[in-house]
Structures are given as structure tokens and as C-alpha cells.
Length: 131
Image 1: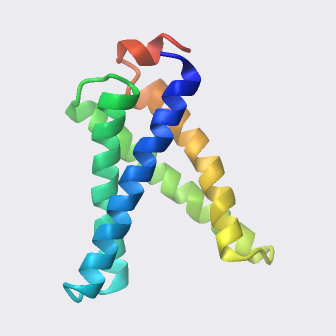
Image 2 (image 1 turned 30 degrees about the horizontal axis):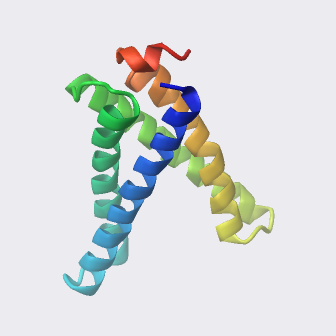
């Protein structure tokens, strides 16, 4: 599979995972009465699990394994920390928080894609063919 095709699949999986995250967030707040931070955390966790399975199967053609799942979760946590740092720095510089988030998203999607391609799913035959 061509590298650009794989990256666009990664983006598409991310869109689906993010939609699930937001749907669960809204449902937990509006229907179940959860507080927004807890609902956001639950939504993010579910979204990350969908992203793992989608990326394993559709993006990288990798088996769903415990080791791959753990590596993916580490990359996701590091991506979240990087996103936090970029948004914090942007807001400190006077940027609107949504502008800072857009920059953070653009940076982290590229970095997490490469980390997942090279590490989380490195054993997948398709992931190693386009290095």
C-alpha cells in the first residue's frame, strides 16, 4: 500500500474514533448526567480503542495483539501530552485556544502516525514495506 494511502486511512480512522468520542461525551453528559471531564475521559478512552482496532486492521494490516495495543496506548498518551503542551504554549502566546488546538492536531497526527507505523504496528508486513 502506498504511504499516502495509509496516512489517509489513518486520518479516516481518527475521524471515526473522534466522532465516537464526542458522541459518547454528549450522551454521558446530556443523558446520563455525568460531569463533562469524566465524560470526556471516557469518550477519549473509547475513541482510542476504536482507533487502535481500526488502525491495526485498516491502516496497517496488523494483528490485534496485546503488545501492539500497549504500544498504541503509549503513543496515544504521548500524543495527548504533546497536544496539551502545544495548546498551553499557544494560549500563553495569546493564540485563541481553537487555533492552538488546530496546530496541535496537525503536529500530533503526523508524529503519532509515524510512531505507530514505526513502533506500534512495526511487525505488520504492510507497515514495514514503506519505510
